[in-house]
Length: 391
Picture 1 (cartoon, one colour):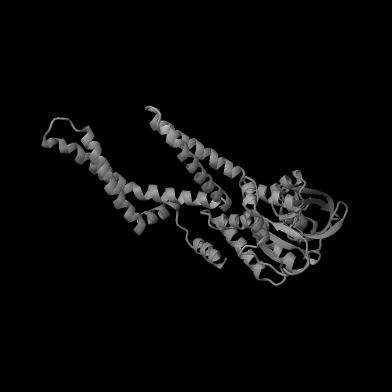
Picture 2 (tube, helix red, strand yellow):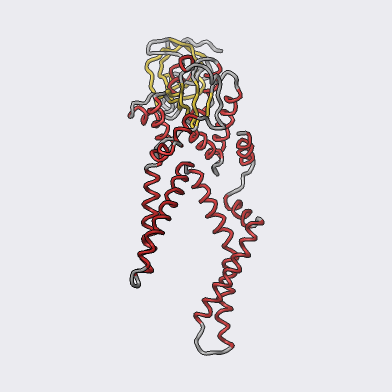
């Protein structure tokens, strides 16, 4: 965890553009090696192409084609090889990081099974008359391996249960699991609560847990931690900052004696993290703690309980309704004619009719109506009297 934090913090200190980063990688020791490999490969390919294009009549002039082609392709490969290879490997690495280890294992098992079966099928196919003996074994290899990979990916959980791997993973905690009071009876253990990436990045869950308002065991699935690490390693500065903050929050919760948190390896189906989280919550019958409104809608459609941090913050705001009288200092002019604008202690904006002339002063106002918007709550009010007490 500390190493991930250090990596993310080091990334924050670098404000290089993508072009500069690619140029540095291309001029790195690995990039220089790839340049010379590309040069040799380009010269070899160009020489053979030049020999193929040269006229059939013998003569010393025929070497001009190979020399020109090998020089051109050698120079081209020398310039482009680092950018093509390093970028492709980086994209491949990024895609592999998004794939679960169980999916990679399923693909490997599928390729192994498909390779064995296609080897058995290739022998009788190779005895057929040409040209079937050349093409049918290759076609059989591709088709059988593809079917085997798709089958193992689709039935990976059933296959894991058959060999006993899934049960062992569920019964045995992983090395990164943080547990407390493991020996306590199940009846005495606190209720569990799944935590998603947005709740960890938000940070308010730390205060809720340490203050005793959230007496739950917080469960962080391994795929949520993986998503948090991807956000912290993002090329986008804002996403990288949010990911770093989430990792710091998670580390703070782990080190706090008042927070009961566990990072758990859980197998889950779903195309994305939100779907996996909802499926886990439904199967384990425990709620989700989140700050994502879209996830809340998805969870409600599948009868999964979700505790929204923003809804809790909204409920904790001071309750004001139409007809209440308060004293408020007007801070600025409003958008409409003769309007003044003030703010409550919690940041709620109050628009006061005929209040423009009292900007900078405290006045008594009467709340006329409240409005809930996507960015928060705002109120409308009118002056209670024309008498103003300067602050």
